[in-house]
Length: 326
Ligand code: NAD
Image 1 (spheres, rainbow, N blue to C red):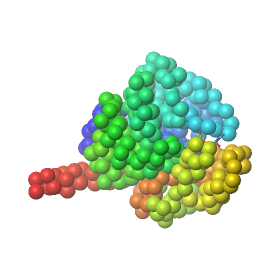
Image 2 (tube, protein in one colour):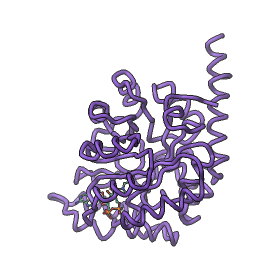
Image 3 (cartoon, rainbow, N blue to C red):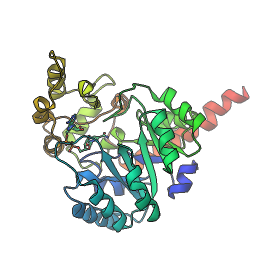
Image 4 (cartoon, rainbow, N blue to C red):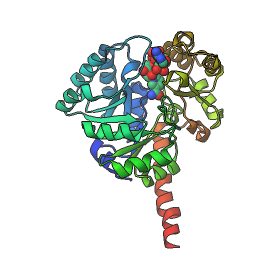
């Protein structure tokens, strides 16, 4: 067992947290991670309305007795999102752990804190992490440049971001982006984090509610098979390098400012959802991190978490222990 401030604060057995993934963070995924002793995370915006989110939380409770969280991402969207109503639903549901991502969550903090919710804010820079601590977040999840989805615009990897955060923050840090095995967990702990957050790695598990073909494509892919799109719009996202991602890059490279309207039909989230459901790999885009280069199998969440923690323990006790005593 590896005990850290994060396992203690969240009441979980292992320092492994599931990333908040659009269309993937459903009850099947979340409960599988929580039942395996990690922290599963439902993605609020995967549900079309706050009422549907309440139903999904109830469904997840039927599937696990262990703690799980809800992720709320506040980034540009094609259709306006009633964020305050999602927050009210989360509070009404009795959820006690929330991961916020994207914009500053300050306006929503008083209501969540009053409800006894622990808030993990996902940050892609040291300055945002310091701000999150200052406004009262309980933990930060530090997202390095390796990550899937939105890495921010600074392009700093976790080898630098994590020790910087560890030097400057008092609240616990979760290392996010690039993690998928025991070596990564040990590295994260050594760099000053109290847990790892994995999105891409959990997509390639038996329980992830996405088509087998998507999982197989990720197993076959290397660390070079991701693309950074929306750079020209300052909303950078790391996605799987398929023909649609390459088409988006082509549009972005055209002379003059990029018009999101030229890209929207290719990238809209509903196409990503269909891609996951039907396994049609060039239907839209999907988030994937550089860690796909380290993914070679499709285990259950339980087997994956056990392997990561066992490998990490072995590395700490044997390899690292022996180095010190040698
Ligand atoms: P969507 O269908 O509304 O938009 C599709 C993509 O286009 C998203 O990445 C969105 O950020 C981007 N986008 C929308 N309007 C934009 C604009 N005006 N300028 C630049 N980019 C714009 O989104 P969705 O796929 O239904 O996802 C819902 C939310 O979840 C979005 O905020 C999205 O960013 C977020 N998300 C996060 C991750 C992650 O890895 N953190 C992954 C997928 C989606």
